[in-house]
Amino acid sequence: MAGPLAGVKVVEMNAIGPAPFAAMLLADMGAEVIRIDRLVSGFLNGDGSVISRGRRSLAIDPRKPGSIDVLLQLIEGADVLIEGFRPGVMERLGLGPEPCLQRNPRLVYGRMTGWGQTGPLAPVAGHDLNYLAITGALHAMGHADREPTPPLHLAGDMGGGAMFLAFGIVSALLEAQKSGKGQVVDAAICDGAALLSTMYYEFKQSGEWRGRGENIFDGGAPFYGCYACADGGFVSIGSIEPQFYRLLMQLCQIDDPAFERQWDRRQWPALRSKLEAMFLTRTRDQWCELLDGTDVCFAPVLDFNEALEHPHHRARGTFMQTDGVTHPAPAPRLSRTPATAGSVVKNGEHTLDILRELGLDAARIGELRAAGAIA
Image 1 (cartoon, one colour):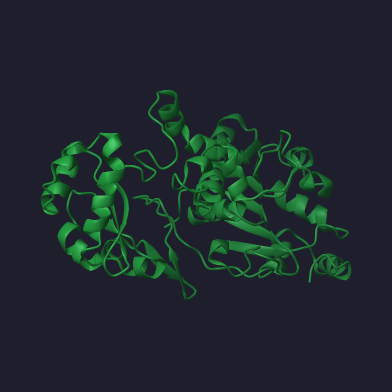
Image 2 (tube, rainbow, N blue to C red; image 1 turned 90 degrees about the vertical axis):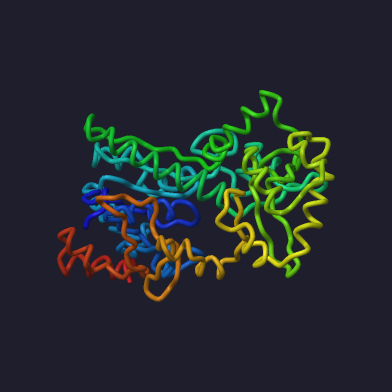
């Protein structure tokens, strides 16, 4: 069964980080994605990786004679273009928004950067950590007595970047169906990460936000965090609501009156120390036997290998295999037009097929090969 984006044609300029992840999301949902690859595989450029699933690949050098004409011809028949380069790179290639939208006025031109297309930092290099750093989000992550802790690049590249790029593209596609006009989607990781921090800015302005490591969701609250167990494993608890907190006290047989003052922040460091000592008295599996499946809001902290075997993931099919590689399955789940993970693509795997579909004959393809534009 075709996904919800069946019939949508996407041209993806191969890059690193969030842009290919956004293209993967669109491909999972049924879009036909053609990735424009380098002739030679480079660092993290998607060749053979799971994130490259569901595409076809055209390997062509845009700096060689004749290539830009081919790419503009391909873009002319597309609904979406995705690029993840620094501002100005696509313009220098001759593939900026102006010539592309002239050839295809309905085109949704998706641009993925860290700092955005404008602003004083726009031309400067950066990475996920830097983009998070200027939003205020990074300053809030980690322990109170240390420097901020760099998170995995989920909050920046993938959450603040790829997810917002995909959301912007789908929104622009819906609008183009009404207006017949495309537009540029300027997706910046720092913009998206800032927006993800909306609740915390609200906490700050209402006076509910303290310093790093002194709040509910950053490990400051003893009833919301991770604890080491006797075997070196870890468990997580999130007993925020009073009824869940009372159940934690009941199941763990905690009768210390100090725990009755759940929201007395002055008690939190002492209560955390007591819980740390308690959780060290049993192994992770023993805590699972006691707390798993209850309303304590509990889960063991699993590593990547253990997560694959968890019964909940097995029941839902959260992980799957593609070409022998185990990886997370597409999400979210649609009842009538579900997403599907396609096969992993190799650089240039479909070059000749795509060129022939564009109507290029053997002589024209020979000219591109002679010019070094294709392998």
